[in-house]
Image (cartoon, rainbow, N blue to C red; front, side, top):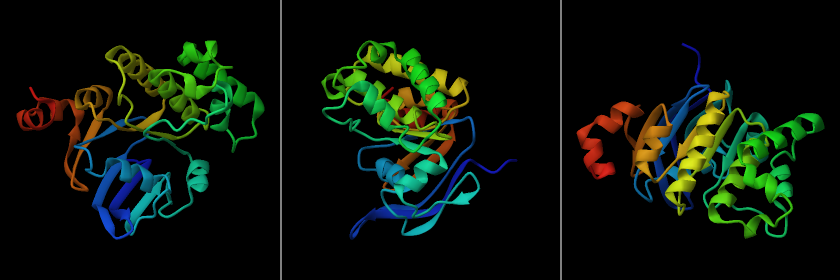
Length: 238
């Protein structure tokens, strides 16, 4: 079997004296959608920050595309092919939708390909094309999330990591964004998704990891986890 695109082994991480991750093991294969689910404070966002270089792992290894990237700077991680769509979108006030999107491609120099990718983002999210001259921070919450995801796409990543896709959004907007991610994945995009709506996470993903107290408590095919009565009782309230 081919080596995973992303593989974490025994990763610990945290903030100052506070340790959040305790020996995390995780793998994402090329072409997959993998979900991280669990309660608030379980360590899911910390895991993404550690992968993307915002935090350095204290122990363990992070391998991406055959290379050790543990402790690499965020720009080096982005150059390697990992884009991180953070919780809260973090768009730049005073910049248009178009300029926020183009910031995702700031490490690229292939102007023709950048233009094609921008056209693809506008095709994926037509409302962004309509509002491309508008200050991105004046969009609705769902539209801002589209812009944040689009900005990640503009780096042309091998792995797109999205932290809390649906947080605070209407069911209709979640459905729209979920459809866009499915379309992206059908086009070959590998995705690592943190999602507080566990049902949405399972429906979107091929495999999932349940994170509790900074450790992997369960892992497996998303369909199997969704059908497991113990998982349903703990996370799906059904």
